Length: 336
Image 1: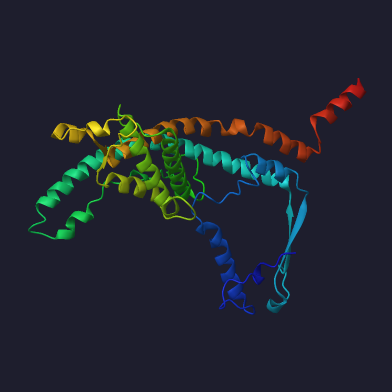
Image 2: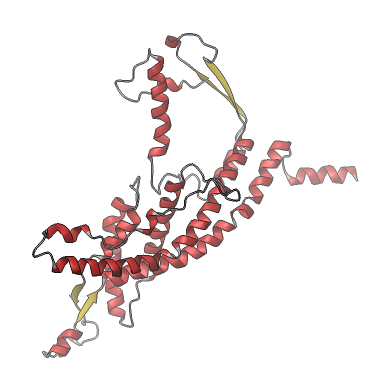
């Protein structure tokens, strides 16, 4: 038996008034929609996507009784019994998962083109920043800060046209799903670049220091941009901050090659002993990697209904009372 009204939300919500109970119900429901991040699933208990459904189908059928407090008084709906059948619950979850996969497949097709859109917008906004800077002497000095690095394309998520009879109705958390996908694929692109290394040219030393710069930049912003519940648009904030970062010049380490003692003092030699870290080009590498990942993930999303075949078979066996394929084979052998 579960009494939903006994959940202590705050000191002001005290039992005794039915209006308060209804208001508490609204607050309980809204808590399920507040979280917006990438760390909600227990990957220790469910290491793979299908492990959740496998464990779910192993659970017995049960009855959940919901009751209202006695302070409200006896009513027709004071006690409600809800039958919980894991097999039928599994069917509903899989159907929603397939619907979301169809939506994400379309979203990934759009994300694969956003890298070029971001750089086109960056070039246009850079011209506006220059024009604003030139006129800053006679105008507001803070006017330049109002121009962003680029116009975020992720803000224009796909919408549903109710007049289109052939279109699927969107899932409830459409905008949130798109932003979570956008954050996740951006995070994956960054992690792969950190692991594989940033390649900006033939100079291995420059590529190495750029990779180290990206790794540190990513670690400094991991908690504020990707871990836990986040605001919308954090992936674009990460890219924008990287694109607006100033280039860095560091001294080349030539101790291993033995050239440090032979350094010339002329300008050409001095220039050769420095390495340049270009955050803008690193951001470009992230966007190129993300565009490539989007096409790969789009294929994965299209295959989601096929991936559900084994789970749906186990779910059907649970509904029909079959235990396993071996038991069916034994019955057939005895019949013959």
